[in-house]
Image (cartoon, rainbow, N blue to C red; front, side):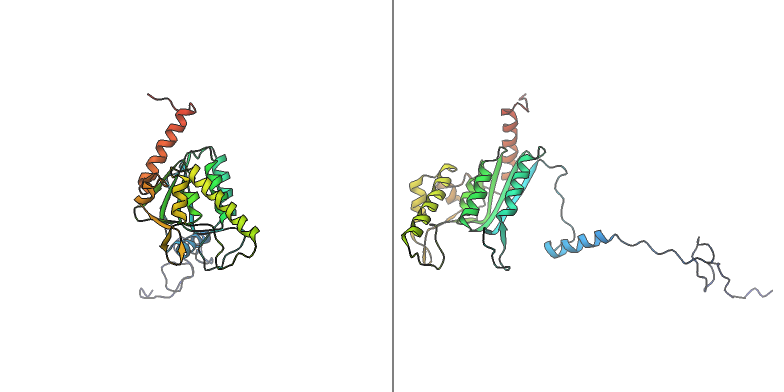
Length: 268
């Protein structure tokens, strides 16, 4: 017998023409390599498209703190153009209701970077935050302008970043002329609602807030005032200058105080 005979033998995994693989019975096709789960690939792709990275750090499992972000322009009853970065109030309100009803959530941090938007939608969000029974802390990053001001002061305690700004100005109709007295009266009453809410939920007086609101020369071709970081604290609008770490630390202390008042925690 010729020892150098390399003829293929069916079913022999060691021969070049063998259809099988090691451990595969003769006559059966080789096993396919395992494929990645389609859902995992889809999740990674969506993460890259939305966040620019494949993985996102996960929060502490079963965290007792709910994070609510209000970014861009606050959208009310009218749909804004698709190129605008918006926060829809019909999305925010159900989240607030769910956080209030969830017994695992003990506190909420609201992070703002908004240019303002719909007055009634902003006031609705602010009233919802103010009416929560659980401790709340707001943090203004970048800006908390216009109707974002009532939202910023709606919590139990408020922070503002050192470089963040808040624009205080009267309620107005952009680019439109008020043609009838009733329209002016409606805007005036809506403005009173904003002033009343802000002064009730912060340390600023009504006189000081209106003074900032009607100051001329602070904004180009407009009236109002830009308040930056520590200035917002000096006038009594915001409680403290700080960042995310300070805000979370304050929220944790408010949660402990809340538990003590309700008898859920005993002070040693």
